[in-house]
Structures are given as C-alpha cells and as structure tokens.
Length: 123
Image 1 (cartoon, helix red, strand yellow):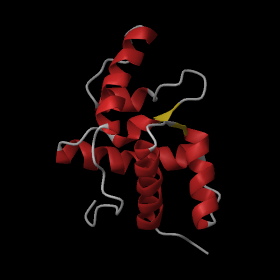
Image 2 (cartoon, helix red, strand yellow; image 1 turned 30 degrees about the horizontal axis):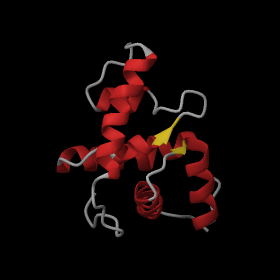
Image 3 (spheres, one colour; image 1 turned 120 degrees about the horizontal axis):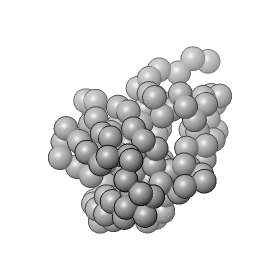
C-alpha cells in the first residue's frame, strides 16, 4: 500500500514529539525503522531526511519554534547532519565540540517546549 507524504510527515512528527517528551534523541536509522514499523513502509533514512525532516524543519523555523529535527542525529557523531546546522544558521565547519555545544542549546529548547501531539494541519 502506498503512503502519502502527509502520512510520512505525520508519523515523523508524532515520533519526534514523543522523543522530545522523553528528553531523548534518536538516530536517522532508528527514526526510519520506527516510521517503517508504524506505517508499513521501507523508507530509507535518507528518504525520510530529505522529505519529512526537511518539511518539519521548515515548519518549525517558520513558526519560530526550536527545530524539532535536532533530535535526529548521526550515529557516529551523535549530532545532526550538515543540513540541520546550515538551516539553523550554524556554520558546519566549526570544530565538533562547538557544533555539539550549539546543538545542545537547541536540543534543550526542544525538550523544554510543550509540543502538541497532533501534527500541524498545514505544513
């Protein structure tokens, strides 16, 4: 069964809000696995990043919310990828400790935000 972009977005939003409420973070692959189990798909982590995460990121930044996609990190570095930092105005060529520090500031804002369980009706 084919799933719409909206279903993918809604599922990713719900997972990320739950991760935020648990004051945790998740790898790109873990997010893909959870989405695939939830809606019965076989999306790659890259597909989810280029589709649902980009849209959620744009929504958060447009609404003046902390970028919820900060909770999705690369497995090895345990920080988000280049696109996250660039979208949030952080030069990716900073040393890793500086990137990690800037990420934790945004991550903590996310953890302290009261997120609605229901995804936005307008993306």
